[in-house]
Length: 109
Image 1 (cartoon, rainbow, N blue to C red):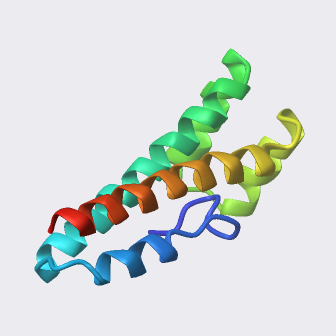
Image 2: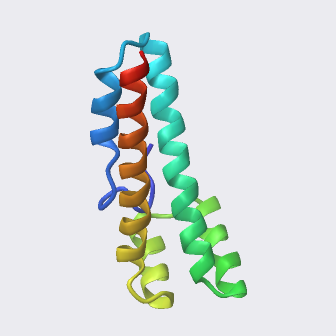
Image 3: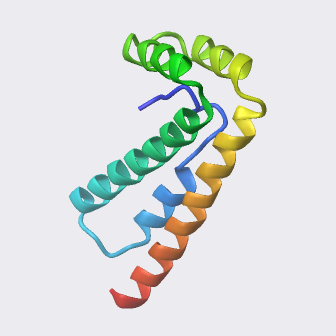
């Protein structure tokens, strides 16, 4: 699923790692959906943490209306310094943690 941050955040490296696990296709799809959801929620948390109360409401309204992604990013850029970098950092940190978890799981399978 495409999100407002998709152009600079990718989960492909994690999904590729899932394909190397000895799991059914259904389990891989389920894990990929959980990964996408985890990253999405972490990014939303970061965004909301950096917005003022009134801006949080406007952001959530834009998100609910499924507006164009560029409009959402423009809104965030105008209100939060270096928001793209902050989003990337949250996604990168979580991606590293997930790679570590997958590596550990490989050793147990």
